Every structure is written in C-alpha cells, then in structure tokens.
Length: 294
Image (tube, rainbow, N blue to C red; front, top):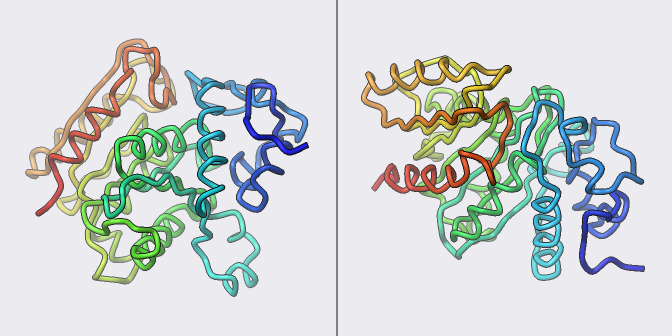
C-alpha cells in the first residue's frame, strides 16, 4: 500500500520506497540504520551521534513536505555527471535536496555535520533548508562524501550556478550554512581563495554570508566572508570561545560578524526549537540580508 502521509511510526523502508531513487540519501548511508526502524525510534542522539534537541515531528514535517513537492517537481539532483559516477561509485552517495522558495530568489547551500563520519542532514540541514524555503529563499541541502566534503560542496555550488535557469534561482547573493563539520565546510568554501582553488572558476562570486553553528573553526583570513555564529556554552565538543575569538579577529579585518552564545545548550541543537536559541535562524537570515552585496 502506498503511503500518502508519514507519521512517527513510519519505517525507514517505507520512506525510502515512497521516494524511489530520491530516498536513498535521506538517511545517513554509513550508519547502521535498519529498514525496520521507525522515524520515532531513530530520532535521538543514539542514532544521530553528537546531536541534541532532535524532534521526530520535524522529521515528519520535512518528509511530508518533500513527498508533496516530489509530486510537482524534482526534489533531488546528483551533482556529478553519469560518467563521473560510473567511474567512481562513491559519487553516487552525493547530491542536493532542493527546498524551493520563490522564483528567482537567492539561494543557500546547507551543510549538515556529523564529524566527517556521517551526514546528519535530517537534523542539521533539512530543517534549516525547509525554514529558509518558507521565507521565500531557495535552499539546497548537500549530501556529501565524508572523505572529500569540500570538493563536493564546491561541485554543488558549480552545479547550482550552471543550472540556475532550470532551478529558477538567483545566482547572486547566496549564502553558505553549516553545523559542526558542515560549518567548517561553509567557512572554507566561503573564503574567496579556497573558492577559487576548489572550483578553478572566476565566474562564481563569493558568498554574501556564512552562517555557522557549533564548531571550533579558528582560521582567519582577509578573504573570509561575513560570518554569523550560533553556539551553546555547554558544548563539550566545540568550545564556544574559539568562535568568539575568531569573530573578533574577523571584525578587526573589517569583515561583518555577528555572534550568539546560548546558555545551557550543548552541541548540535539544530534550529533550537523550544530552547533558549529558538528563533536564532531569523537573526541569521537578517544578517544575510544585511550583507547582500549590491
């Protein structure tokens, strides 16, 4: 029987079957998730290691949104060609899920963390992409190879640029978002020198903003993009003071920054729904808008 609406008791197998080829990468491919597991049973820190504030209702909302959208348009795009994927089977586990906003609106690429061990998209990039699409932005959630994440993010950016007309997006004023390991990815490709190095292209402009959550990235360069940071002061994985220091040095270079530290929050709080960080994404969006280059 075909599922028309997902709920917390829907199994992983039922979800994957409902989405066909687009369902393979909805859940981390390199974690021991059983096909018989339910959405409720995997919505916890035991499955999504290093993450907190995981809510099954958000997972259900995301999947129901994507299923509805899939009936109208393509929701998943491989970022590598068929020939490239045939030559390297690892590339099959990459691609972007498209959370569509308004036609010709700017776009974001959202990068989940997972310690460069797995991709925690269901909690760390899909929710953000969905919220951005609700506000009219076109948002892409990247599924990347954990052993070559920066190359995959660069390729995703190239793919979006080269298919802007088909995707109905504005190539200008884009932003890069990420949590934990994904935040490091956003910061690296948000740096103009790294952007040029990874893409070997000069037609792709630098991101207007980089939005980072809970990471310990400390490298500073005059080529970095305007940067917004949201962290918790009970993060036992990435010390929030590292990011405060980094933003101090970026500000000294004249690069716009905005820093938020939330008391009592640990690593991987995602959207922070129901916590002291609830609504942080609105401030991040405003930061992005304020730094859109003319």
